[in-house]
Length: 249
Image: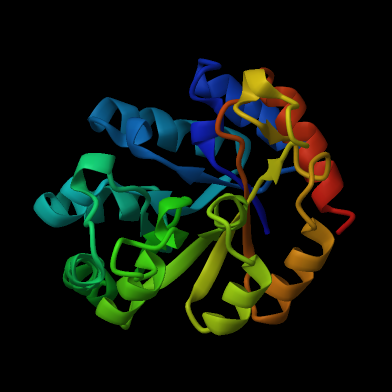
């Protein structure tokens, strides 16, 4: 299933038009993020946009603050939008541990936060960036420590961020194949290109070996492939070119 992280279109309102654009481009699903369910009106607008276009929202991102402190609200939103999986997407720089034990404890914190959601039938896990693959001063790899501390955590693998973190995505896929339940599909522009787009590229138009990586992800049973670009100058171009390329992988 090819999905689309709606964060990619945050700078191109209204979201209702984005839903229409995505459905026309051939997407069947989207992934939610915080602004889409910031309040009841936002949730209803998101729900209406899905209904009008036939798109589904099987996965969604929620902040750690919401996951820990607003559990009933997260459950209500996830059920209303018919999500199947919930991912915690980020940790601010000032909140990041500085050593292996800190990251292990963070994994245990996520494990605890996810208990209720798993009990209610949702998949629950972590979505990475690059910082989880950079060794701490004591030599620990944060991503390893997170999973050691959270033995039941699923992984929404953001492949391009793994690469930007200096790691080999194929090795991580093999090592954690039992954890990966979805993947973010985005591409990295050749060195020095697309500076106005923070060095990202449309899927299939960059340097990531997506045919090989997607084959490896499919081989371990991943079904949710979520297109993302952190800062596209034209979200329609990105969405359209990316799904066209991905269908050929």
